[in-house]
Image (cartoon, rainbow over all chains, first blue to last red; front, side):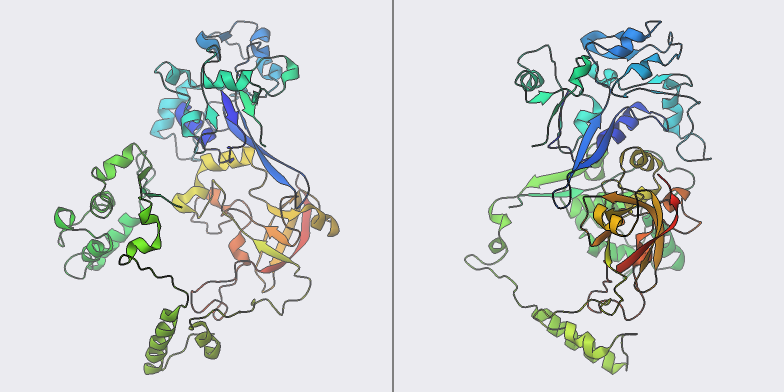
Length: 199
Length: 310
């Protein structure tokens, strides 16, 4: 995935769409847009930084997992098998992008004291107490030939999704040309998410 | 040149929850119970005019419709959207390209002519009508100096001074409010949406706070995270946590979004954050008699009332 920071307007539509697509419970954000500022008035500027799992090719979370619950799936995705995860949370500590979180409690409703909505009742079994939470690149959508929901939702079309193994893909060209670059390259994790910087 | 025209409509994506009711349904229910929904001159009749409902889409005057049914007919009749509300089950916006000619004012006038309003002569006529009507019933606009009121009804611009001109120098900042992507005009109870609240809490340091220029804060001895009170020149006030930033003009004070609702009958989530509207004065005589507008940027003073919350 390539994210063009010059197009991101910080609306967090990607984050909200992610929550709706994946029914993540309160306190869990697989995708989010951070904000920070630089410079002094009147030359100050607001910046947006969309964050999600980088699906690293050299994934520290995968290397520290003692049970193999974190695994490399088809297409290079980094996923978690909840059935064999022992919730040691080494992966959370290892991720330099802080892309993972942990369900300390059984998911509760968003509307306090109102009970689970029908949508929450259907979605929350995927997020049991003690599970590790992270972006899957919407693997269920990829299997259907669709792009991740954050990509199709972005109103400014700041996200480009494609096959990094295909040299002719738009994402490959942006990466190999140096237009798009990874964050925290010095960590050596070889992320699969790249950013085009603001001009 | 704007060459796209469109219609934005939203349909519920989940069933109504917890005895909630769409506001328009309440109006329809009230109209029926009070007795002005049906018949000529009733609400259905007015809706036919308002939405330009014609032919098969016209509402029958003796039948109760749902909001969805009315919207469906409006989309088909007024906007020509063939599938009506069904279209918006899968899309949020309907748009079509306009021709270049349609983008120019002259398109709407006889060929070779156009007209741009330079003088607002209609204001003169409106003022004459209003003056006549008020005089006929021996009325004035409460709280307003009528001599000043009539000065608004003229076709040329005239400078009108700020209502806070006599405020003391300690009210040294101008309060500002702006819509944020998540909380715009409190449409659809956005402020009460717990998902939006969570998103903003987790990602946006510039909401649910009171924003002040970094140098201005330093001059006032205030720090990021201080609990402060903002008092408008006329007495209205609100409180909140201060966020210092370089993004704001040194003379401005920012209270973004639409937060701090006070009614205990509202969703509790809406009560979080400072309440900008508390800084606005809507007393009789303070608003613009022509538009009913109020001063949206009152002069304010700010001082610390509590410890640092950062």
